[in-house]
Image (tube, rainbow, N blue to C red; front, side, top):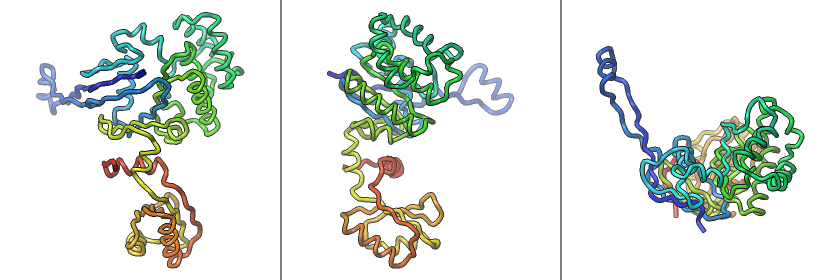
Length: 336
């Protein structure tokens, strides 16, 4: 059963520009110059009940615009959207009872009142019975470890504390579908791990469908089997994360830290008979080579480089998802 059905979805915005000079300003009073910007460009997407899907892309790719249409905040320019069997922007009141939304940059909690008072207000908004609230929220509060925070005003919470409370607030009515837009932005590693474990648990227990947009690809790797990759308003990949990794690159990365400075031309010349790609690392004298080949090829590359350049440190890693995504955007191509 598909919980999200999207066909040929498009969202366009008008971008107005001002004419120069006094004459231009006078003309702008009567006619405005504008151009049409297409934020989401005829995308089609289906998400089954119980799936955890990573919806990723660079800034401006159209992720947040898509989420706003799926949640009924924005009306599409054209196309069809059916979420939980409803049209989000036409059946707004009924629809919001069936979704939970967490925006990392926005709060659904009241700033100056205690967290539990916000929960009680949301309980009334979503028309949740006392029995259902007590049963469900007791578990949510315990799992997210927010009981000590319930009497505190939201303004006195740290970012990590607030985000855990935001997540609990989105689940007061135990919705079948949860939209998460940058839910772990700015959080430390321990808080991120707690949130990830909690999301996996509600997905396992309630079959909660989760659509996650984030720049933290560790969230995607921890939670999502499937990724949808967006670029310039279009879907350029929709499938298994594992398949994306396999299709894009087969090989490993070697992180070299040299005792002395090395140049890109010299490294490329040294390894020209191998299928490799070099890039500068973050630290001084650090270079990273991606080797397309088996373990034998990796060993030969390492041997040849180390025979010529004195090494301070060397590490062997699998190519990260972050690196794969960066390569896709830099080269603008999906392999396989």
